[in-house]
Length: 260
Length: 378
Image (cartoon, rainbow over all chains, first blue to last red; front, side, top):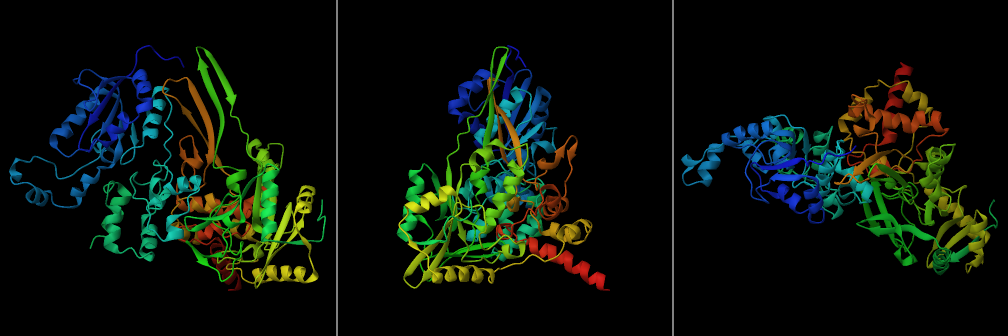
């Protein structure tokens, strides 16, 4: 496949998020020149000056939708984007800020702001795919640099990215890790969490925190029963499921099952 | 070549001489050692890297190291690793392709594996290696990566002196005594301060190496002690597989409600298949670089518990956990026999211990077996 001389235009968009996933692109360091050689970075406020103009062949969207303004802006981004890829737990699941979805937003505003009447916000934080069609979702909090490069490389040659939906356990076993849950009794979300981090925490003898959200076909109730046997109480389990991917279906349902 | 001598005994120093002799012959010596609170297989050079004085407590979803009252070097059951890690590695690069203008060049990956010497290969593990030999190099379509590692490997086998809580090799007829397929075989003999290893050779190279070691001829008392070790181990099996025609039992009960019950507990996390010493499935992954100049194909372990595994055009054939568990167990215990002539299970118990929720393959067979037999009686 011969490539055209014209480089694809890349846009990097930020919604409600911490910027960590966009930073992953800048963290590419060694590969950054290659990225800049392969695509025309046309809009990336975190890195370069430039204004929104025309259409983008590939848009990377970070962050969740938490305001009416952003709910409208994502429609514009979608219209301007040939291919739209969401990056990170905020964009794919609503992020840590989706904890508001389980509570009353007015209570939060009253507790945090001296003048809550100045705050205009939605009562929920929702993933981009709830608002516009998304072509590909890259998971993680934050995303992995290798996986981001894989998504870009795959896009550039028109193939499907290799980002398997299997459990963190499979990656632990590929690495030869000793299972922290079986051998140490450490609570671990690995058996229901999507691959992507190369089993980072269990490789350092910590349980998985579920940064990459649910794997395909998870079985949270069975995992909860085991966590209970390991001595993790009901309230603790609720918090365990309710972190960066709190609003992702299987995590959300299991934490709701644990509500008092 | 059969056992070339009737046995000798060596001391712990003699065992060190064995490790040295193997290293001198260019082998990469791999054996059990303690890491991250478990006994794993890693490269080692000295006997003091072996898990002296350690044993393990194993049950469904449970593994803990415990101290022994003696300084046994092999006083534990199998751990989370198997020799599959070395003979059929988790990841292998297959080829690279590079593009130069219109020209595309494919270059097979260089695969120059070390010559491995494995220390302490138990009977169930020899059985597992023999099963993978059949699967991966037993017919005209041999896997070159497996074969290049396997054909050069030197196996120091071990008669088991300790059965774990999830062991059931006795009921699978694979152990605990070593029968064939080794270069040297050890039996650890502990009698107070007298710490010896009965050693026999099972190959020409094994006999050559044995001849280099400082040793004493084994006495009848040593032979009797070694027999007693194995018989004690046989009596300690933590689990047993029901003695019945398992292939027919499973294939006649593909719609048994027990499959739904196990699916309620199963996490489809794939741990059982990863730790199984005979599970051999892999997938291939392609990567390309940003410039579109080089591409690489690699192979890694995969599992019948993932949806990608059974993905064909249009979707995954086995989307439910029930269908995945049933596929795994019926293949392991039933269709494996049709395909390769033996059961795919060697009774090592790893799938039970390392299942995070402790699903027990022997209990699953027993549940269907007991239910069917009780209905037959009615």
